[in-house]
Length: 380
Image 1 (cartoon, rainbow, N blue to C red):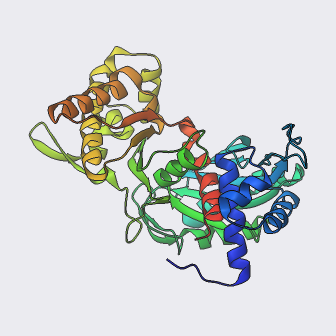
Image 2 (spheres, rainbow, N blue to C red):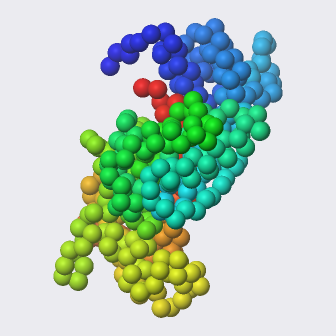
Image 3 (cartoon, helix red, strand yellow):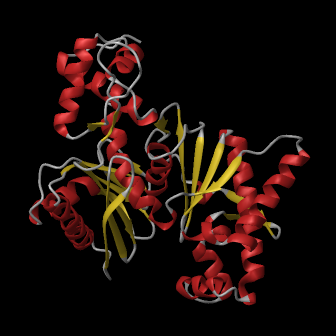
């Protein structure tokens, strides 16, 4: 495919290509970048200097090579000058974090709310974001943008949340509402990006990975609800209208009848089976209470069935489990893996790698900062 556009667009593509190279191979020199990108040395030097001046890159001490001539200067992402803001929107609570370009959390805040009114929720959300933005400005950092993970399928371009059963929202222009609330909170001119919660968490696993990510990557969010994010061919799989990853509605056969995965596997489902609140269920799991063991094992078995079904559909190289339930070890996650391995053995096929999300319960908020980075470093 031929790439055409004005000079500023092409220049930005080249700049971000160098950022991605240095992120993947910290310590590359200007000469290395010229070799890897095919750009002239003078063009690379100019663009690198711009990226240093803007806070994207920093220089290490020049390497001693023993060769005659100018010593190469290693380049790395600068973690001192720029900041990414991410927010996780849940019923009753919002979490906001700021991270560096490498995913290190440098500020965080959490606010609770007892409303589901769109404008009231956006006001609470904007207040939390504004607090973290001001903390970054006080550190003399430049904020690159705000990412938001929302509980439901969203059209990423328009920022419209199609529906959210937990909030009772339908066709809400979340990005526009948040921009209005941010302006009222004194924050303006920051780009805002919106994506499903599980999809943002998937991006966190990709953009802030310590090693090369094998694709496709399938992230499954296990909380009060169930969702998934799929990263393949260097991008999120969003689907035609933003509905890709709505796996909580997958039908699983249980006790002779079909129920959705969310009705069996989620934290809400397990709490209902125990006749207690989700918070009480979490407390019993933390205390290793025997009264919830059978419920965990049953849900874990069907989680394994769900993973198997998604594996058969997407053929991922790796599966990442995140959300509150991902830390339910022996009786839940281990049971799921046992079921997955048993079904794989029946088909004489090696199952994908399965791991727990590196950012734990902050996976969505940190993933939302990765959403900002993803949009910037992949201008195509």
